[in-house]
Length: 86
Image: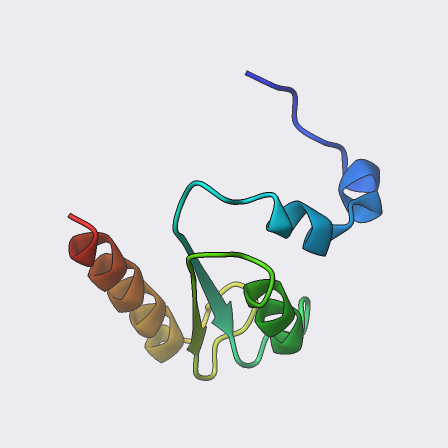
């Protein structure tokens, strides 16, 4: 198993180039519409670079999905996504 990247190493990554490397799996990204840490537009841009990608934006969700309604949306979407793949 590879070692984890440091924060400094992660900040230097070209995330769009890394996203384009994902070719052999399906990807679900769940993003909160009120995320102040990573703007929702970043999630949309990432989605444009990953094949077999589904982007779900949880209305009102912040970066940690602290709002119960947003957390419920997130969990329901993940469960639905996994069940659909069975």
